[in-house]
Length: 78
Image (cartoon, rainbow, N blue to C red):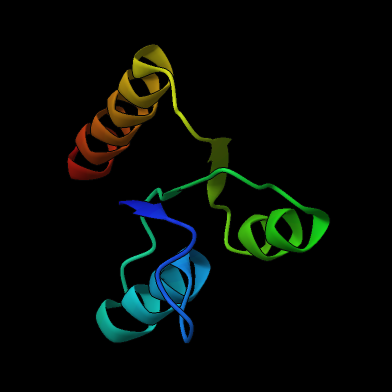
């Protein structure tokens, strides 16, 4: 999952990851992209094992993240 951090006044990308984990039971890789990384975001994301990258995210960084997701899915299926 890739999500922006700032989603609106009531929710943010970390909230979205928490909701999806709770609703589906899935805890796969997630990436939050944001223009502003602070200690609170790092702490919240770290508690969920969520990666955080600064915007604009480099194409290679996103590609690497997606490849790691694919590798994780293949390993889980074996």
